[in-house]
Image (cartoon, rainbow, N blue to C red; front, side, top):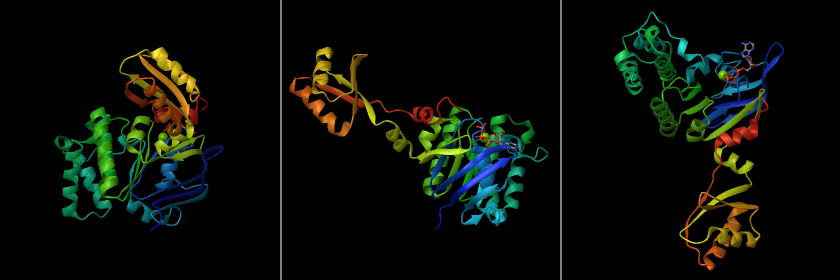
Length: 314
Ligand SMILES: Nc1ncnc2c1ncn2[C@@H]1O[C@H](COP(=O)(O)OP(=O)(O)OP(=O)(O)O)[C@@H](O)[C@H]1O
Ligand SMILES: [Mg+2]
């Protein structure tokens, strides 16, 4: 079976603006893919093309085996979409539950299944007590939750989420993240989500892509990207007792570290090829009768990767 999302050489222009520039990207089944990048980078435009709201200027986008230009109807049946302006796309003359019912019927969800699905989603998103109210009376976060329910009403195998937690409180954001992770794992759904929340991408996404000025500049697993950008690794060493300055000079004299200092009662050193050198550093300390309590790596966060890839230059 082909990958659920396959983008090849896709460009989208708006007049003189090249919003998406020759992007190649493949997202695998069951994967949660995070799309990261500055404002106006081309994230939402990519989602709109992939979800058939816009047509590409050139290149191809194939969703679940269907081409966006040739088979948009087929694509709409297999995708869920939480658009960027999702909070403002409900019918205010209908109640929350009726909004979901309307979309469920559009997607041909059988009636008996639909009621269960509506109940489940409203319950999960803590909207049950508002089911008979108009979304016009909702706060932004409540509207966004209803949009999320709508995106999932027909249980689609592929889901596009454009900043799904941007209006949600921290507890609901976490709940939604856990829900996404669970659905990706147990139902093998594929998620493509844009987010500015790097910690969210780090927690949730199997892989991330960085887009800048319409160009996809990096794709990879968060851990692999960290490794790619940090060949030198930083370690913190905590000793049970003893003279930190002496420990520092012992480590220094091994000639294995690129830099070393004492910070907050810990020896902090930077090393390349840590797998080979750390055992030797530890051995030198043990031979000098130092007892090691903890040797911990200072792991760079995805935010650090973002700053390196995107920089301040956007
Ligand atoms: N309908 C449109 N007409 C003209 N230009 C557009 C249109 N939609 C998007 N653009 C432009 O395309 C570029 C990419 O916009 P896009 O919405 O994809 O960015 P984004 O990465 O989602 O940004 P944000 O993080 O702010 O949501 C921007 O320069 C934007 O102004
Ligand atoms: Mg956007």
